[in-house]
Length: 226
Image 1: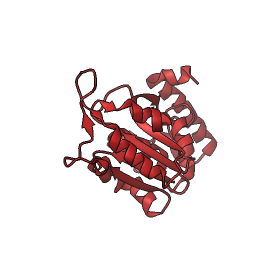
Image 2: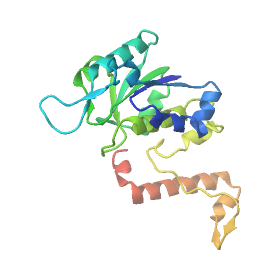
Image 3: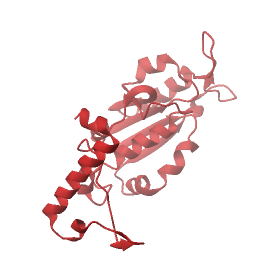
């Protein structure tokens, strides 16, 4: 998989890509992630990428010229399965959507900033808009990282234990069961006996019940929509 990211603030993106799972996935050659600085496509001496909105109002809008130049240059070299704009009014990022995107070959992520982007950019290029939650952030860089992390970890070979992906929270529409590791007792707190029993059928049943109970307690809405 290849993921291209268009942003006016590439340093917001760079750090997390060099750590943990995302870094290992790139080292293994399982994903190529390329960050493009939108300011490199601005033509004025100040490398301006934003301007005040027509009609007045607070905030600044990303200009169409640098975005068009950047995206058209990338599209001339690559065929993208999706051009995704990270937006507060996009479809919610859920596990099923991450699963779907993990099967794609080439994704282009467009990070808005300030008040948003010129609508003509959306109309011309964007094939999908995605939101990571019902709140407002300064820009699309952090949502882009969230999306990338949720997708890349699903690529075969990225994580050591492929079976663990199937047991992740939300894969079955449920939260995950409680997890424990050594030692079996710590400061008087003991691991549930069933997990020490070696009886895989009983362990599976315990985990199934725990998933149901935790979801009912914390995210009843998931059960209502299942």
